[in-house]
Image (tube, rainbow, N blue to C red; front, side):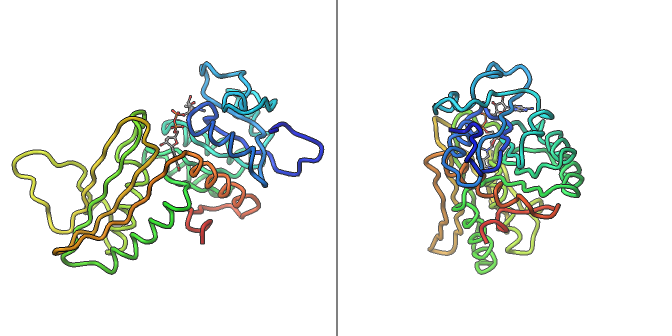
Length: 274
Ligand code: NAD
């Protein structure tokens, strides 16, 4: 049961975007968490799920926590928050969490660079972690890619492929971009200098040093990422497959539990998995 019980010592968690695919998975993950319990569930104003029991929505037994559209009130009931909602709202959510003194993990992707200002301001008063991918395996993959790119320089072309379900909004995925950034950093470059996001036409020769991205969308694919280092007569491929959203949800709750009690500042998944 997610509802508060006299003997439940787990701390209350707020899920922002609770009625979405990840939100519902996070609700289920909270039921098996040893550190956190569902304290409040928020979705957007106008969502048809406002007022519904968040656990029932997530195909679990009734938990007594209705989905609400009142973020400020919900923050009063929680010790830590996770956001898997919409890129356009994330900056405002970070500001609200900072005002309430509630640590925040942002899992939402596709966020505009302008949100960085709000994140920086929020991180002055709360611990804040922004993670394009909260799976432990992907975060290890990011470090392996960084090391491989540093080791394999001249003559090794880096190409990144990702595949996701048909409902995903942003492309390439936040994880593919994080992999690209790690690869570029491994070569002391910035991704902006070397990224190639599209190829089409008669004069599309690969430029030396570029990092190419390819995107596939369809069906219910949870998340596939591959980074290929293509050398002369050999290819090294590092890859990760997620077969269930639960891997992101468990990683997110692990990171959210880790954030509690930390000093204000910016944290990364590599701090959590280190
Ligand atoms: P979804 O569309 O199924 O769910 C999003 C939910 O957020 C919806 O219920 C929507 O109504 C709600 N929402 C929108 N605006 C809101 C607001 N202002 N306040 C509160 N709720 C709001 O999407 P999804 O598949 O669950 O993915 C959500 C986000 O999480 C996406 O950006 C996705 O890329 C990202 N994601 C991240 C990871 C990770 O590991 N970090 C993993 C999977 C998905």
